[in-house]
Image (cartoon, rainbow, N blue to C red; front, side, top):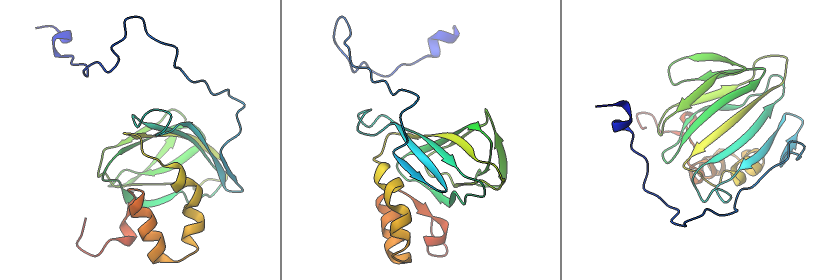
Amino acid sequence: MSYSDHLVYPEPRYHGARGEVNASFRPADTPPEISSPGGSTSYLATHESTGGEFGLYKAELGPRSAGAKTHFHRAMSESFYILSGELELYDGEKWVTGREGAFLYVPVGGLHAFRNVTDEPMSMLMLFSPGAPREEYFEQVAEVAQRGPAELKEFRIRHDSYFAEDLEPGTT
């Protein structure tokens, strides 16, 4: 049995005979959708633009940026690819340092967190699969956090983000 005998591709979803023109291009100089003193987020591929297949975002974190505390997702995996700088990544057991070219895959349900503890900015790609409408989360989480812990917890759960600090003792 050869290696290729084990390859299983998904069922075809396109049934045309010749292909079609349907690609989308984002020029490198497109400004980020979200900008703040602490960083920026660019929407490279959204839930809407990929039909829910995946979401791909470029995030830039400023020096000493808090990032995200320990959490998990019930409906999607999350991956991180470091483009430049350094990022501390929590893999569910320990903090590891990601530098340019480092990659962390977090399966559904996997605990993870990230933070920039350096005096330099950093940038990364974040991939969510399947795609989810993360844009509202990115755009509103800072503002919702100002409303208090109860509203923040409800907002996070609505966006498939279960933070350790929000969980009742003994629950997962």
